Length: 94
Image (tube, rainbow, N blue to C red):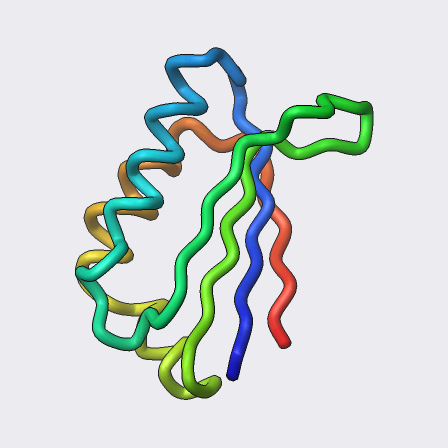
């Protein structure tokens, strides 16, 4: 199992923007064959260290993740759509 985690810091973390980003990320569910598990969460603690939205994705292996990363749906319908909302992001892959 290969796990890809991303934390997103939004430029404006309004309720509307948070829900839009969450919905957009969740739209990948069932649309990308390599993506085996998808979990999205909105931060509830809101500490100085917090990021606003997190996503956990799981794949059978690293190669499947690499295919997902360039998948047309992922790039065109998710990354490009939420990109303008982002201030920063961090990833962890293992």
